[in-house]
Image 1 (cartoon, rainbow, N blue to C red):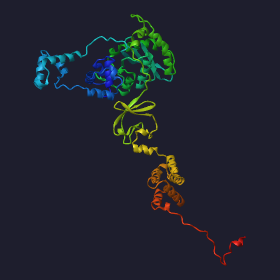
Image 2: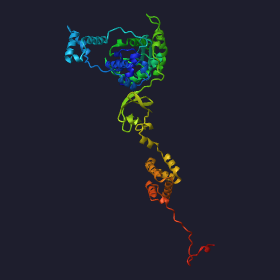
Image 3: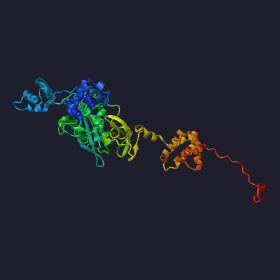
Length: 500
Protein backbone atom coordinates (compact mmCIF):
# COMPACT_ATOMS: atom_id res chain seq x y z
CA UNK A 1 0.00 0.00 0.00
CA UNK A 2 1.42 3.43 -0.98
CA UNK A 3 -0.72 5.57 1.36
CA UNK A 4 0.57 4.37 4.76
CA UNK A 5 2.64 7.50 5.31
CA UNK A 6 -0.24 9.73 4.20
CA UNK A 7 -2.55 7.94 6.67
CA UNK A 8 -0.18 8.52 9.58
CA UNK A 9 0.51 12.13 8.54
CA UNK A 10 -3.19 13.00 8.49
CA UNK A 11 -3.70 11.23 11.82
CA UNK A 12 -0.73 12.61 13.75
CA UNK A 13 -0.27 16.01 12.08
CA UNK A 14 -3.76 16.74 10.73
CA UNK A 15 -5.56 15.28 13.77
CA UNK A 16 -8.30 13.93 11.46
CA UNK A 17 -10.71 11.14 12.26
CA UNK A 18 -10.32 7.74 10.64
CA UNK A 19 -13.44 8.34 8.59
CA UNK A 20 -12.18 11.62 7.15
CA UNK A 21 -8.75 10.15 6.41
CA UNK A 22 -10.40 7.28 4.53
CA UNK A 23 -12.50 9.68 2.46
CA UNK A 24 -9.55 11.95 1.71
CA UNK A 25 -7.29 9.13 0.51
CA UNK A 26 -9.95 7.05 -1.21
CA UNK A 27 -9.46 3.96 0.97
CA UNK A 28 -11.62 2.09 3.44
CA UNK A 29 -11.94 3.11 7.05
CA UNK A 30 -10.83 -0.37 8.11
CA UNK A 31 -7.49 0.09 6.37
CA UNK A 32 -6.94 3.40 8.17
CA UNK A 33 -7.77 1.77 11.50
CA UNK A 34 -5.44 -1.14 10.74
CA UNK A 35 -2.34 0.94 10.04
CA UNK A 36 -3.07 3.43 12.82
CA UNK A 37 -3.29 0.51 15.23
CA UNK A 38 -0.07 -1.03 13.90
CA UNK A 39 1.76 2.29 14.31
CA UNK A 40 0.46 2.62 17.85
CA UNK A 41 1.51 -0.96 18.68
CA UNK A 42 4.96 -0.27 17.26
CA UNK A 43 5.26 2.87 19.42
CA UNK A 44 5.84 5.13 16.42
CA UNK A 45 5.21 8.88 16.36
CA UNK A 46 5.36 11.29 13.41
CA UNK A 47 8.97 12.30 14.12
CA UNK A 48 9.98 8.64 13.70
CA UNK A 49 7.73 8.01 10.70
CA UNK A 50 8.62 11.12 8.66
CA UNK A 51 12.17 10.09 7.52
CA UNK A 52 11.03 6.56 6.55
CA UNK A 53 10.04 5.62 3.01
CA UNK A 54 6.97 3.51 2.28
CA UNK A 55 8.88 0.21 2.12
CA UNK A 56 10.68 0.77 5.45
CA UNK A 57 7.46 1.89 7.12
CA UNK A 58 5.53 -1.13 5.82
CA UNK A 59 8.21 -3.56 7.04
CA UNK A 60 8.36 -1.85 10.44
CA UNK A 61 4.60 -2.06 10.93
CA UNK A 62 4.18 -5.62 9.66
CA UNK A 63 7.06 -6.96 11.76
CA UNK A 64 5.59 -5.37 14.87
CA UNK A 65 2.00 -6.40 14.16
CA UNK A 66 0.31 -7.92 17.22
CA UNK A 67 -1.13 -11.44 17.02
CA UNK A 68 -4.59 -11.59 15.52
CA UNK A 69 -7.53 -12.19 17.84
CA UNK A 70 -9.06 -15.66 17.67
CA UNK A 71 -12.54 -14.34 18.52
CA UNK A 72 -15.13 -14.02 15.79
CA UNK A 73 -16.35 -10.41 15.70
CA UNK A 74 -19.97 -9.75 14.80
CA UNK A 75 -21.12 -7.32 12.11
CA UNK A 76 -21.71 -4.29 14.31
CA UNK A 77 -23.29 -2.39 11.45
CA UNK A 78 -25.95 -5.10 11.14
CA UNK A 79 -26.39 -5.13 14.91
CA UNK A 80 -26.91 -1.35 14.87
CA UNK A 81 -29.66 -1.78 12.29
CA UNK A 82 -31.28 -4.66 14.15
CA UNK A 83 -31.51 -2.61 17.34
CA UNK A 84 -33.88 -0.25 15.50
CA UNK A 85 -36.46 -3.00 15.59
CA UNK A 86 -39.07 -2.69 18.31
CA UNK A 87 -38.28 -4.97 21.27
CA UNK A 88 -34.76 -5.90 20.06
CA UNK A 89 -32.03 -6.03 22.73
CA UNK A 90 -28.26 -6.44 22.77
CA UNK A 91 -28.68 -9.52 24.96
CA UNK A 92 -30.74 -11.30 22.32
CA UNK A 93 -28.29 -10.40 19.54
CA UNK A 94 -25.36 -11.62 21.68
CA UNK A 95 -27.12 -14.92 22.39
CA UNK A 96 -27.73 -15.46 18.67
CA UNK A 97 -24.08 -14.67 17.96
CA UNK A 98 -22.89 -17.19 20.59
CA UNK A 99 -25.31 -19.80 19.27
CA UNK A 100 -23.91 -19.40 15.76
CA UNK A 101 -20.17 -19.51 16.58
CA UNK A 102 -19.97 -21.12 20.04
CA UNK A 103 -18.74 -19.81 23.37
CA UNK A 104 -15.09 -20.61 22.65
CA UNK A 105 -14.92 -18.21 19.68
CA UNK A 106 -17.01 -15.29 20.95
CA UNK A 107 -16.65 -12.52 23.52
CA UNK A 108 -18.59 -12.52 26.74
CA UNK A 109 -21.64 -10.28 26.93
CA UNK A 110 -19.86 -7.39 28.74
CA UNK A 111 -17.07 -7.22 26.12
CA UNK A 112 -19.66 -7.56 23.35
CA UNK A 113 -21.44 -4.45 24.68
CA UNK A 114 -18.20 -2.48 25.04
CA UNK A 115 -17.25 -3.13 21.42
CA UNK A 116 -20.67 -2.18 20.15
CA UNK A 117 -20.72 1.10 22.07
CA UNK A 118 -17.28 1.98 20.69
CA UNK A 119 -18.66 1.38 17.20
CA UNK A 120 -21.75 3.49 17.91
CA UNK A 121 -19.60 6.41 19.09
CA UNK A 122 -17.71 6.39 15.80
CA UNK A 123 -20.88 7.00 13.80
CA UNK A 124 -21.35 10.43 12.22
CA UNK A 125 -23.18 13.08 14.21
CA UNK A 126 -25.02 16.01 12.66
CA UNK A 127 -23.40 19.26 13.78
CA UNK A 128 -22.87 22.85 12.73
CA UNK A 129 -19.64 23.33 10.81
CA UNK A 130 -16.87 25.02 12.77
CA UNK A 131 -13.75 25.72 10.72
CA UNK A 132 -10.44 25.51 12.54
CA UNK A 133 -7.55 27.83 11.70
CA UNK A 134 -5.57 26.65 8.70
CA UNK A 135 -7.66 23.52 8.36
CA UNK A 136 -9.53 23.82 5.03
CA UNK A 137 -9.20 25.60 1.71
CA UNK A 138 -12.37 25.53 -0.37
CA UNK A 139 -11.99 25.81 -4.16
CA UNK A 140 -14.45 26.12 -7.04
CA UNK A 141 -15.01 27.77 -10.40
CA UNK A 142 -17.49 30.61 -10.65
CA UNK A 143 -20.29 29.93 -13.09
CA UNK A 144 -19.80 33.28 -14.81
CA UNK A 145 -17.00 33.89 -17.32
CA UNK A 146 -15.27 36.94 -18.81
CA UNK A 147 -15.39 37.49 -22.56
CA UNK A 148 -12.20 37.89 -24.62
CA UNK A 149 -11.68 39.36 -28.05
CA UNK A 150 -12.00 36.55 -30.58
CA UNK A 151 -14.99 34.94 -28.91
CA UNK A 152 -13.16 32.95 -26.22
CA UNK A 153 -14.05 33.09 -22.52
CA UNK A 154 -11.93 33.30 -19.36
CA UNK A 155 -13.08 31.05 -16.50
CA UNK A 156 -12.75 32.38 -12.95
CA UNK A 157 -11.26 30.14 -10.25
CA UNK A 158 -12.09 31.04 -6.63
CA UNK A 159 -10.42 29.78 -3.43
CA UNK A 160 -11.29 30.73 0.16
CA UNK A 161 -9.90 29.68 3.55
CA UNK A 162 -12.49 28.33 5.97
CA UNK A 163 -11.72 30.28 9.14
CA UNK A 164 -11.05 33.76 7.72
CA UNK A 165 -12.80 33.57 4.32
CA UNK A 166 -9.64 35.14 2.83
CA UNK A 167 -10.30 34.93 -0.91
CA UNK A 168 -8.23 34.33 -4.04
CA UNK A 169 -9.44 34.65 -7.63
CA UNK A 170 -7.64 33.71 -10.85
CA UNK A 171 -8.63 33.49 -14.51
CA UNK A 172 -7.90 30.34 -16.55
CA UNK A 173 -8.54 29.51 -20.23
CA UNK A 174 -10.53 26.35 -19.42
CA UNK A 175 -11.53 24.12 -16.50
CA UNK A 176 -9.26 21.14 -17.18
CA UNK A 177 -7.34 19.27 -14.49
CA UNK A 178 -4.25 21.33 -15.32
CA UNK A 179 -6.30 24.53 -14.83
CA UNK A 180 -7.72 23.31 -11.51
CA UNK A 181 -4.39 22.25 -10.04
CA UNK A 182 -2.39 25.12 -11.56
CA UNK A 183 -4.79 27.66 -10.10
CA UNK A 184 -4.77 25.87 -6.73
CA UNK A 185 -0.96 26.00 -6.69
CA UNK A 186 -1.14 29.74 -7.36
CA UNK A 187 -3.67 30.10 -4.54
CA UNK A 188 -1.32 28.37 -2.08
CA UNK A 189 1.48 30.71 -3.14
CA UNK A 190 -0.90 33.66 -2.68
CA UNK A 191 -1.77 32.50 0.85
CA UNK A 192 1.87 31.78 1.64
CA UNK A 193 1.13 28.39 3.17
CA UNK A 194 -0.70 25.08 2.89
CA UNK A 195 -3.88 24.03 4.74
CA UNK A 196 -4.50 20.54 6.05
CA UNK A 197 -7.34 19.89 3.58
CA UNK A 198 -8.33 21.16 0.15
CA UNK A 199 -12.06 20.82 -0.51
CA UNK A 200 -13.16 20.99 -4.16
CA UNK A 201 -16.51 20.18 -5.67
CA UNK A 202 -16.66 16.92 -7.65
CA UNK A 203 -15.32 18.03 -11.06
CA UNK A 204 -14.77 15.22 -13.56
CA UNK A 205 -11.37 16.73 -14.36
CA UNK A 206 -10.12 15.88 -10.84
CA UNK A 207 -12.36 13.24 -9.30
CA UNK A 208 -12.26 9.84 -11.00
CA UNK A 209 -15.27 8.53 -9.04
CA UNK A 210 -17.61 11.11 -7.47
CA UNK A 211 -19.06 8.60 -5.01
CA UNK A 212 -20.98 10.18 -2.12
CA UNK A 213 -19.29 8.01 0.49
CA UNK A 214 -15.93 7.11 -1.06
CA UNK A 215 -14.97 9.68 -3.72
CA UNK A 216 -11.76 8.78 -5.53
CA UNK A 217 -9.42 11.39 -6.95
CA UNK A 218 -7.05 10.55 -9.80
CA UNK A 219 -3.31 9.97 -9.39
CA UNK A 220 -2.32 13.46 -10.54
CA UNK A 221 -4.43 15.00 -7.77
CA UNK A 222 -2.86 12.65 -5.18
CA UNK A 223 0.59 13.62 -6.50
CA UNK A 224 -0.31 17.29 -6.05
CA UNK A 225 -1.46 16.63 -2.47
CA UNK A 226 1.70 14.66 -1.62
CA UNK A 227 3.91 17.44 -2.97
CA UNK A 228 2.26 20.05 -0.75
CA UNK A 229 1.80 17.74 2.25
CA UNK A 230 -1.97 18.14 2.26
CA UNK A 231 -5.02 16.10 1.28
CA UNK A 232 -7.90 16.60 -1.16
CA UNK A 233 -11.32 15.87 0.32
CA UNK A 234 -14.13 16.35 -2.26
CA UNK A 235 -17.45 17.68 -1.01
CA UNK A 236 -20.54 15.49 -1.31
CA UNK A 237 -22.26 15.65 -4.69
CA UNK A 238 -25.13 18.16 -4.78
CA UNK A 239 -24.39 19.30 -1.20
CA UNK A 240 -23.40 22.99 -1.46
CA UNK A 241 -23.60 23.31 2.33
CA UNK A 242 -20.38 21.28 2.54
CA UNK A 243 -18.51 24.19 0.92
CA UNK A 244 -20.63 27.15 1.96
CA UNK A 245 -17.53 29.33 2.41
CA UNK A 246 -16.50 29.12 -1.23
CA UNK A 247 -20.11 29.36 -2.44
CA UNK A 248 -20.35 32.64 -0.56
CA UNK A 249 -16.95 33.74 -1.88
CA UNK A 250 -18.03 32.99 -5.44
CA UNK A 251 -20.98 35.33 -4.97
CA UNK A 252 -18.72 38.01 -3.52
CA UNK A 253 -16.21 37.65 -6.40
CA UNK A 254 -19.07 37.82 -8.87
CA UNK A 255 -20.46 41.01 -7.38
CA UNK A 256 -17.28 42.84 -6.38
CA UNK A 257 -14.90 41.82 -9.16
CA UNK A 258 -16.64 40.42 -12.25
CA UNK A 259 -19.37 43.04 -12.30
CA UNK A 260 -16.70 45.76 -12.27
CA UNK A 261 -15.06 44.13 -15.29
CA UNK A 262 -18.22 43.65 -17.33
CA UNK A 263 -17.66 46.68 -19.57
CA UNK A 264 -13.94 46.17 -20.17
CA UNK A 265 -12.42 44.45 -23.21
CA UNK A 266 -9.61 41.94 -22.75
CA UNK A 267 -7.25 40.40 -25.29
CA UNK A 268 -6.08 37.46 -23.20
CA UNK A 269 -6.48 35.63 -19.91
CA UNK A 270 -3.34 37.37 -18.60
CA UNK A 271 -5.04 40.73 -19.10
CA UNK A 272 -7.99 39.53 -17.01
CA UNK A 273 -5.68 38.43 -14.19
CA UNK A 274 -3.90 41.78 -14.27
CA UNK A 275 -7.25 43.52 -13.82
CA UNK A 276 -8.30 41.17 -10.98
CA UNK A 277 -5.28 41.90 -8.73
CA UNK A 278 -6.26 45.39 -7.44
CA UNK A 279 -9.93 44.41 -7.14
CA UNK A 280 -9.02 41.30 -5.14
CA UNK A 281 -6.90 43.34 -2.74
CA UNK A 282 -9.79 45.75 -2.30
CA UNK A 283 -12.20 42.88 -1.62
CA UNK A 284 -10.02 41.27 1.06
CA UNK A 285 -9.49 44.59 2.83
CA UNK A 286 -13.19 45.45 2.84
CA UNK A 287 -14.56 45.52 6.40
CA UNK A 288 -17.05 42.87 7.53
CA UNK A 289 -20.58 44.08 8.22
CA UNK A 290 -21.19 42.19 11.48
CA UNK A 291 -17.72 41.11 12.55
CA UNK A 292 -14.65 43.16 13.48
CA UNK A 293 -11.92 43.57 10.90
CA UNK A 294 -11.72 42.27 7.33
CA UNK A 295 -10.80 39.11 5.49
CA UNK A 296 -7.18 40.27 5.34
CA UNK A 297 -6.95 41.02 9.08
CA UNK A 298 -8.73 37.78 10.00
CA UNK A 299 -6.34 35.86 7.77
CA UNK A 300 -3.30 37.47 9.36
CA UNK A 301 -4.56 36.70 12.88
CA UNK A 302 -6.17 33.27 12.43
CA UNK A 303 -5.25 31.33 9.29
CA UNK A 304 -1.76 32.54 8.38
CA UNK A 305 -0.01 31.34 11.60
CA UNK A 306 -1.68 27.92 11.31
CA UNK A 307 -0.78 27.17 7.68
CA UNK A 308 1.96 24.68 6.88
CA UNK A 309 5.04 25.94 5.04
CA UNK A 310 5.17 25.80 1.26
CA UNK A 311 7.56 23.20 -0.23
CA UNK A 312 10.93 24.44 -1.45
CA UNK A 313 10.29 23.33 -5.04
CA UNK A 314 7.25 24.42 -7.05
CA UNK A 315 4.81 21.74 -8.12
CA UNK A 316 4.99 20.52 -11.72
CA UNK A 317 1.99 19.01 -13.47
CA UNK A 318 2.42 15.27 -13.95
CA UNK A 319 0.40 12.46 -15.50
CA UNK A 320 0.61 8.82 -14.45
CA UNK A 321 0.60 5.65 -16.50
CA UNK A 322 0.89 1.98 -15.54
CA UNK A 323 3.35 0.11 -17.77
CA UNK A 324 4.98 -3.31 -17.97
CA UNK A 325 8.73 -3.71 -18.46
CA UNK A 326 9.58 -5.33 -21.80
CA UNK A 327 12.11 -8.12 -22.14
CA UNK A 328 14.64 -5.52 -23.35
CA UNK A 329 14.37 -3.79 -19.91
CA UNK A 330 12.62 -0.73 -21.40
CA UNK A 331 9.18 0.79 -20.82
CA UNK A 332 7.28 2.77 -23.43
CA UNK A 333 5.54 6.13 -23.27
CA UNK A 334 4.16 7.84 -26.38
CA UNK A 335 6.24 5.66 -28.68
CA UNK A 336 9.60 6.32 -26.99
CA UNK A 337 11.32 3.69 -24.83
CA UNK A 338 13.08 4.38 -21.54
CA UNK A 339 15.39 1.95 -19.71
CA UNK A 340 14.88 0.59 -16.19
CA UNK A 341 17.10 -1.73 -14.11
CA UNK A 342 17.18 -5.11 -15.90
CA UNK A 343 16.09 -6.93 -12.71
CA UNK A 344 12.60 -5.43 -13.18
CA UNK A 345 11.86 -7.20 -16.48
CA UNK A 346 8.17 -8.26 -16.65
CA UNK A 347 7.29 -6.14 -13.58
CA UNK A 348 4.36 -3.69 -13.64
CA UNK A 349 5.61 -0.17 -12.87
CA UNK A 350 4.15 3.32 -12.74
CA UNK A 351 5.34 6.26 -14.82
CA UNK A 352 5.19 9.82 -13.53
CA UNK A 353 5.54 12.05 -16.57
CA UNK A 354 6.05 15.81 -16.41
CA UNK A 355 6.66 18.23 -19.24
CA UNK A 356 10.41 17.63 -19.10
CA UNK A 357 11.00 14.32 -17.30
CA UNK A 358 9.88 10.70 -17.07
CA UNK A 359 10.16 9.05 -13.65
CA UNK A 360 9.72 5.29 -13.19
CA UNK A 361 8.28 4.24 -9.83
CA UNK A 362 8.24 0.73 -8.32
CA UNK A 363 6.37 0.19 -5.04
CA UNK A 364 6.56 3.87 -4.20
CA UNK A 365 10.31 4.11 -4.93
CA UNK A 366 11.81 5.88 -7.94
CA UNK A 367 13.97 3.37 -9.82
CA UNK A 368 14.78 5.43 -12.93
CA UNK A 369 14.53 9.00 -14.21
CA UNK A 370 15.00 10.23 -17.78
CA UNK A 371 14.71 13.44 -19.73
CA UNK A 372 11.47 13.29 -21.70
CA UNK A 373 12.00 12.56 -25.40
CA UNK A 374 9.36 13.03 -28.11
CA UNK A 375 11.19 10.89 -30.72
CA UNK A 376 8.86 8.01 -31.51
CA UNK A 377 10.65 4.71 -32.01
CA UNK A 378 13.74 5.97 -30.20
CA UNK A 379 15.48 4.67 -27.08
CA UNK A 380 16.82 6.41 -23.98
CA UNK A 381 19.13 3.97 -22.21
CA UNK A 382 21.23 4.31 -19.07
CA UNK A 383 24.26 2.00 -19.14
CA UNK A 384 23.86 1.11 -15.45
CA UNK A 385 20.48 -0.48 -16.23
CA UNK A 386 21.98 -3.01 -18.67
CA UNK A 387 23.16 -6.55 -17.88
CA UNK A 388 26.95 -6.87 -17.62
CA UNK A 389 27.29 -8.52 -21.05
CA UNK A 390 25.20 -5.84 -22.78
CA UNK A 391 27.08 -3.10 -20.96
CA UNK A 392 30.42 -4.50 -22.14
CA UNK A 393 29.18 -4.56 -25.73
CA UNK A 394 28.06 -0.93 -25.56
CA UNK A 395 31.51 0.11 -24.37
CA UNK A 396 33.18 -1.02 -27.62
CA UNK A 397 33.78 1.52 -30.38
CA UNK A 398 35.87 1.58 -33.60
CA UNK A 399 38.40 3.99 -32.02
CA UNK A 400 38.84 1.74 -29.00
CA UNK A 401 39.43 -1.37 -31.14
CA UNK A 402 41.92 0.45 -33.40
CA UNK A 403 43.80 1.80 -30.36
CA UNK A 404 43.99 -1.73 -28.93
CA UNK A 405 45.35 -3.07 -32.21
CA UNK A 406 47.95 -0.29 -32.47
CA UNK A 407 49.14 -1.10 -28.94
CA UNK A 408 50.14 -4.54 -30.27
CA UNK A 409 51.82 -3.28 -33.43
CA UNK A 410 51.53 -1.20 -36.58
CA UNK A 411 50.47 -4.15 -38.76
CA UNK A 412 47.85 -5.25 -36.23
CA UNK A 413 46.43 -1.70 -36.08
CA UNK A 414 46.25 -1.55 -39.89
CA UNK A 415 44.54 -4.95 -40.00
CA UNK A 416 41.87 -3.84 -37.49
CA UNK A 417 41.31 -0.57 -39.37
CA UNK A 418 40.81 -2.36 -42.69
CA UNK A 419 38.51 -4.91 -41.00
CA UNK A 420 36.20 -2.11 -39.83
CA UNK A 421 36.39 -0.16 -43.11
CA UNK A 422 35.50 -3.14 -45.29
CA UNK A 423 32.21 -3.78 -43.44
CA UNK A 424 28.97 -2.00 -44.34
CA UNK A 425 28.71 -0.77 -40.74
CA UNK A 426 31.60 -0.72 -38.23
CA UNK A 427 29.62 -2.79 -35.70
CA UNK A 428 29.55 -5.65 -38.21
CA UNK A 429 33.31 -5.98 -37.76
CA UNK A 430 33.34 -5.83 -33.94
CA UNK A 431 33.23 -9.59 -33.44
CA UNK A 432 35.91 -10.24 -36.07
CA UNK A 433 38.19 -7.63 -34.46
CA UNK A 434 37.63 -9.06 -31.00
CA UNK A 435 38.44 -12.54 -32.34
CA UNK A 436 41.60 -11.26 -34.05
CA UNK A 437 42.83 -9.42 -30.96
CA UNK A 438 42.01 -12.36 -28.69
CA UNK A 439 44.71 -14.38 -30.49
CA UNK A 440 47.21 -12.50 -28.28
CA UNK A 441 46.22 -14.72 -25.35
CA UNK A 442 47.33 -17.86 -27.22
CA UNK A 443 50.21 -16.68 -29.39
CA UNK A 444 51.47 -13.43 -27.85
CA UNK A 445 51.86 -9.96 -29.28
CA UNK A 446 55.04 -10.50 -31.43
CA UNK A 447 53.60 -13.48 -33.28
CA UNK A 448 50.24 -11.75 -33.88
CA UNK A 449 52.03 -8.68 -35.25
CA UNK A 450 54.10 -10.88 -37.59
CA UNK A 451 51.01 -12.79 -38.76
CA UNK A 452 49.16 -9.54 -39.48
CA UNK A 453 52.18 -8.31 -41.50
CA UNK A 454 52.07 -11.47 -43.63
CA UNK A 455 48.29 -11.15 -44.08
CA UNK A 456 48.63 -7.55 -45.27
CA UNK A 457 51.30 -8.62 -47.78
CA UNK A 458 48.92 -11.29 -49.04
CA UNK A 459 46.10 -8.72 -49.31
CA UNK A 460 43.78 -10.26 -46.70
CA UNK A 461 42.43 -9.12 -43.30
CA UNK A 462 40.20 -12.06 -42.42
CA UNK A 463 40.41 -13.38 -38.88
CA UNK A 464 40.48 -16.96 -40.16
CA UNK A 465 43.50 -16.27 -42.41
CA UNK A 466 45.52 -14.68 -39.59
CA UNK A 467 44.55 -17.57 -37.31
CA UNK A 468 45.72 -20.15 -39.91
CA UNK A 469 49.03 -18.31 -40.38
CA UNK A 470 49.65 -18.58 -36.65
CA UNK A 471 48.46 -22.18 -36.45
CA UNK A 472 50.75 -23.21 -39.34
CA UNK A 473 53.63 -21.20 -37.84
CA UNK A 474 54.18 -19.35 -41.10
CA UNK A 475 55.04 -16.27 -39.08
CA UNK A 476 58.06 -18.17 -37.67
CA UNK A 477 59.46 -19.35 -41.02
CA UNK A 478 62.64 -17.57 -42.10
CA UNK A 479 62.61 -16.22 -45.66
CA UNK A 480 64.83 -18.18 -48.14
CA UNK A 481 68.33 -16.65 -48.57
CA UNK A 482 69.01 -15.17 -52.04
CA UNK A 483 72.41 -14.59 -53.78
CA UNK A 484 73.33 -12.05 -56.39
CA UNK A 485 72.61 -13.46 -59.82
CA UNK A 486 74.91 -12.87 -62.78
CA UNK A 487 73.87 -13.50 -66.32
CA UNK A 488 76.09 -16.11 -68.05
CA UNK A 489 78.07 -15.19 -71.14
CA UNK A 490 76.35 -16.07 -74.39
CA UNK A 491 76.69 -15.05 -78.01
CA UNK A 492 73.14 -13.73 -78.06
CA UNK A 493 73.59 -11.72 -74.85
CA UNK A 494 75.15 -8.28 -75.30
CA UNK A 495 76.42 -7.93 -71.79
CA UNK A 496 76.67 -4.89 -69.54
CA UNK A 497 79.62 -3.41 -71.43
CA UNK A 498 77.44 -2.90 -74.51
CA UNK A 499 75.68 0.08 -72.83
CA UNK A 500 78.84 1.82 -71.67
